[in-house]
Image (cartoon, helix red, strand yellow):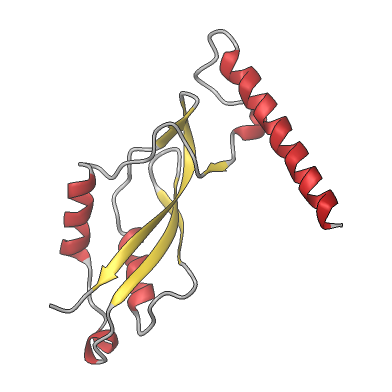
Length: 144
């Protein structure tokens, strides 16, 4: 049973690769994706989304906007929350959530709030087209 699942999955990957390859090599077709790929969320792309102003601006945004949750501060909780989110084709952010095993005492909620408050990013690109991209970002909580 498990073996059949892997064969079906592999067949699906081969078909998707064939569609992408035929699209990618078609003359003059770099402005739109095949219909089957238009609503896909990508994890690997040619150009990843970027925070406006680059990495230094993203770090500064986090430093200036993070609010250490009072409960976590009182209990001296420190660590990292991994936040997953999608950068849409228009650069907006959606589907924000803290990964399992994240810090509690409000840190996970604050990390999600922080990411949701970010300005629109420069969207990612695959095969010359703007696409939705799933990203994961660590948000660190450390007491000074």
